[in-house]
Length: 72
Image (cartoon, rainbow, N blue to C red; front, side, top):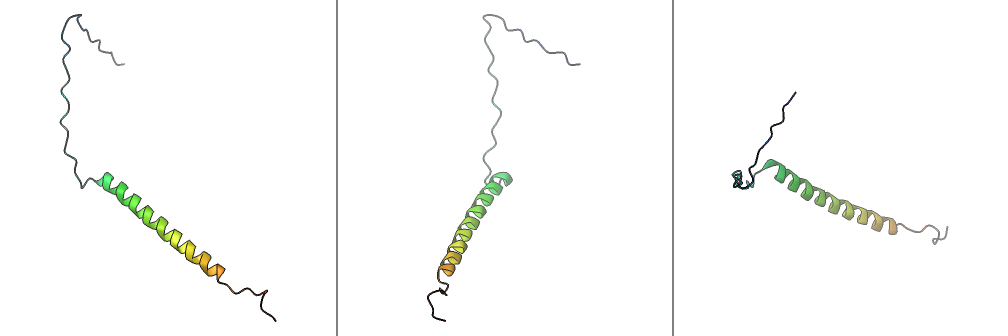
């Protein structure tokens, strides 16, 4: 069982400001950031490729000869 610590603050006592943790400089080679950027760019490329492929297929279907207009 944990005992909770009680912090006592006196009425006119100055409140000590916590020192901020030192920030590490942003590393451009961080794994997670680059992984997300790579995933987004890969997804964008795949989406464009799918759109081009679909457009070509639709165009090919439109170019099929119409069998009803040809005399038999």
